[in-house]
Image 1 (tube, rainbow, N blue to C red):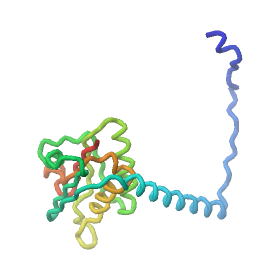
Image 2 (tube, one colour; image 1 turned 90 degrees about the vertical axis):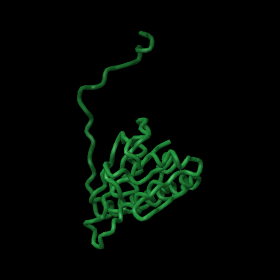
Image 3 (cartoon, helix red, strand yellow; image 1 turned 60 degrees about the vertical axis):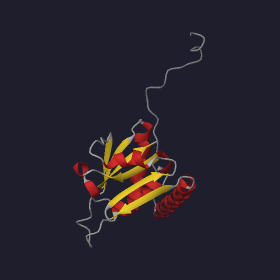
Length: 174
């Protein structure tokens, strides 16, 4: 052990100073362009990754049920039952539809890494929307079936009334 420490020196007590550059308009524009390019690259990557995953989606009025081609519809049917107990939930009330994909993808990937299998994502029923129709549920369905998290999703269905009904989605991960 002493041989391993033979060349080690203690760190200096004085932290090094780092200069923070001030943002100039040109630099700010460049960072906005970089962000736009990064977002476009992420969308292309999501399309590539989710390209091999196909979901069967069934819609009946406000009820939605979707599952991967290789999954059993019986397993997914249990998601809308009273016995479904989510391990984590995400509330998207008030979120913009354009941001749903990123938020859902991050949430699903985080909880998949933690070992969770049952998630609840709340989108609301859209009662406060301009035309009274929810815009978050279609965005959520797209996020679960076509984003970076699609390979982690086995299926999803409209949640039981006790968990939010048509305003929430019960999700089963692989």
